[in-house]
Amino acid sequence: EIVLTQSPATLSLSPGERATLSCRASQGVGNFLAWYQQKPGQAPRLLISDASNRAADIPARFSGSGSGTDFTLTITSLEPEDFAVYYCHQRSNRPPYTFGQGTKVEIK
Amino acid sequence: QVQLRESGPGLVEPSGTLSLTCAVSGASITSENYWGWIRQSPGKGLEWIGDIYHTVITNYNPSLKSRVTISVDKSKNQFSLKLSSVTAADTAIYYCAKNEDYWGQGILVTVSS
Image (cartoon, rainbow over all chains, first blue to last red):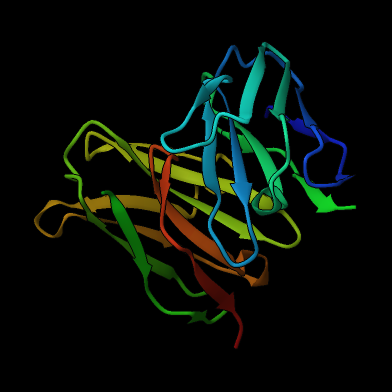
């Protein structure tokens, strides 16, 4: 099973600041890596697929990069609605497809 | 606009079978998409359960494979999840999803007597 490790667990930032979230895979996943945002009481929302492709209607301040084992989600300038929990998820070669444990972006 | 909606009992007795349905609108269940189930519990975070493709090709999480069945009902444009021999560890919010890009709102299922 491929383990995804996200860091940091919590990121305390102010609106307007830049957020950089990391996801490291225990073995290579190519570019089969997605990022999700989840707010309380809501389902996860797809932000990024295939490591760097923004999903429909996702603002340009969200970007993804990386391949293989190291991936990054960057939010260039945090808006109030961006404070949430972010998960990475891999769907490489064969099951089980796994999620990271999440990074909470909180208001400082 | 693709929409998915989970339905089913919110309470299941231990050793029983959890049965959920996901109704799909805005897309055909026979189209070339993965229709899957993911669950979320405080203890284990997000866990991929499995999916179905081309209405008959299934992939399951090996940790659940002996207890899980995912199937499609083409006449109702929906798909379902059955998880047998449930325990308290199966208590979670269950989500259905299309290609893991469109998700339902989730349904809380509690395993308890």
